[in-house]
Length: 178
Image 1 (cartoon, one colour):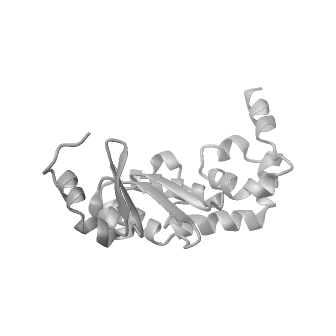
Image 2 (tube, helix red, strand yellow):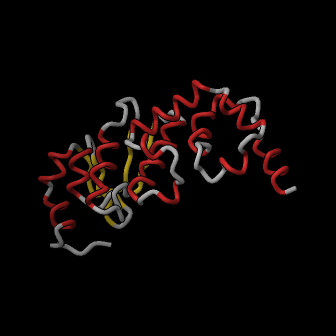
Image 3 (cartoon, rainbow, N blue to C red):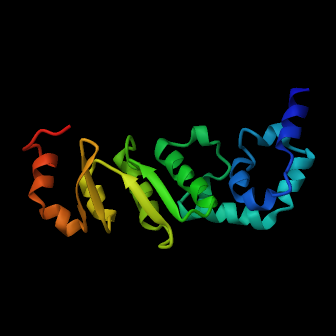
């Protein structure tokens, strides 16, 4: 009975094709839902959306996860989970992508892939990220806004920020802030 309720709740809505790429990412063989819904009408409906399934695979490939498509996300290393989050966000075709400390907690061996995926994001997507690692900020930013104590200290291109004595004082520890 519980599965029938889940099936009813998971039935495709009329707007299914618009969200198919994001949903398809969760319904690959081996995902937690595959065994639960295998053979159900829902799976036939998902399979009939080949274009959306191909789009989901392309999104996974764009962030380096094509080989992991059949793995449960819970079994992916943390860095690959972050890549999956980026792929899911890209499935919505955003104009702005907000990333909060995208490399935080990721081992350096995995952060290369995450940073590479960020660098390869489409140029028509504006990326706004909050980051404390200044080398990472300077690697990606075209424009930087420096906050201290919740207030704007300065903003400008990376070259101006790097040479700003106030920024150096606050972020290199010569001045107290907060």
